[in-house]
Amino acid sequence: MDYEKLFRQEKPAFYIQVTDESSFADMYLQLKEHCGEAAIRIVRGNKSTNVPNFFNEVGAALQFPYYFGENWDAFEECITDLSWLDSEAYLLMVSQANLLLQDAAQKDFHILMQILLNAHDTWLNQPHYVNEEEEPTAFHVLFACNDLDVSDFSQRLVEAGVEFQVL
Image (cartoon, rainbow, N blue to C red; front, top):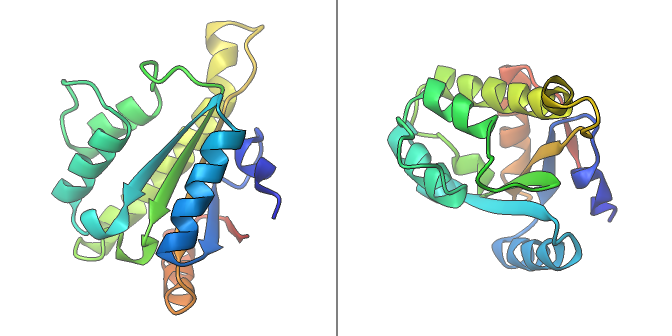
């Protein structure tokens, strides 16, 4: 499997990996070992079934600053900054992605996908605004689903209007 695409400055922003929990954990360790210059963080879908729990989970995973306001605007501000992680690439891995915001309104899932997509685009263009010599930064989201849930989760992404690739 070519996981290098997860660290390239290109589209799509979203990938789905069909895998079980154990293999997902192994993949995380392998990616951390081979891509040490990248900030790779896990958000647990089973701990992010509603909006408040998602903000708690993502805030802990990405070590958001104390002033994170736990709302969509604050999330967007933090996810497009990440200066406290200072990395050459960012990969957000979501385990049990089918459970991500499953107890929230559908519009909240759509808002999340749009913010993450905007973050991907911002990271590709942001360095040029600050310093023309800076290279774009890869920012991707890898959703993990088991084979029973991948179809339903893929449909949620389609309904949210985002492009994705199944690895």
